[in-house]
Image 1 (cartoon, rainbow, N blue to C red):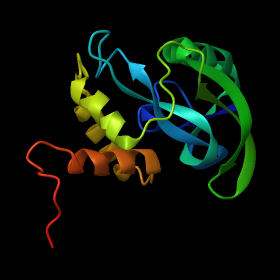
Image 2 (spheres, one colour):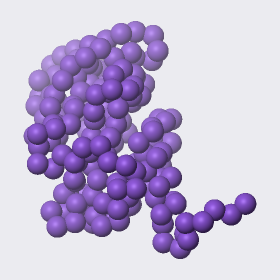
Image 3 (cartoon, one colour):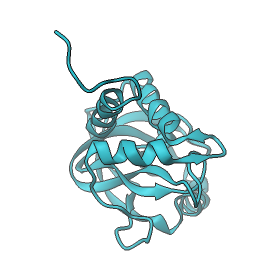
Image 4 (spheres, helix red, strand yellow):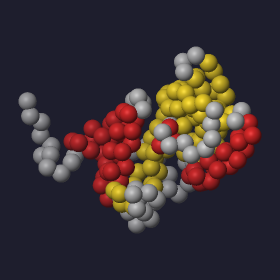
Amino acid sequence: MAWIFTYNEMMWDFPYPYQMRKKALLEEHHRSFNYLMSDRYGSPSAPAPGLGFETSGDCRGYAYLIPEDEEDETLENLQKIHTDRFTLKESTIIVDNTSSEDAFFFISNRSHPDYIGKLVPQEIVKIAQQGFGPCGSGTDWLVYLYEKFLENGISDLATDAVMSAMKWHSPGNSGSRTS
């Protein structure tokens, strides 16, 4: 059996058979809007910010325990979904604040042409405002992630900072504070 640590929409939309789903912590990693997404909420001509994964910090997410007879096929399918934008890694996670387990996860591939690195939240918002794909706009994507994180009890600095910047820089906001 293998644990798969998820930090993105896979936390609530895991498409493969599993035996168990638990909250988990992966130390020394964090979420980051660090690549240009050209599918779903973006397109090649109007990419949206994609949610990737970087080293440093700590990340709370969900881990799925995959049955042994499904392990190879699940990992192969996950690699297809993540494409070459991500690299499969293995590390120790803390499951339900009680046990340490080895787990697989995907980290952003810094050599991929769509990798944009660390940007300030205002830059992420600008990219999102220009992004549009078959599922909606880049800003729709940011709002969706934020709401799903809240719904799943996940606090995330990257999405919180981007949502704050998006509210501050939204149309109709003059940029001045009122008392």
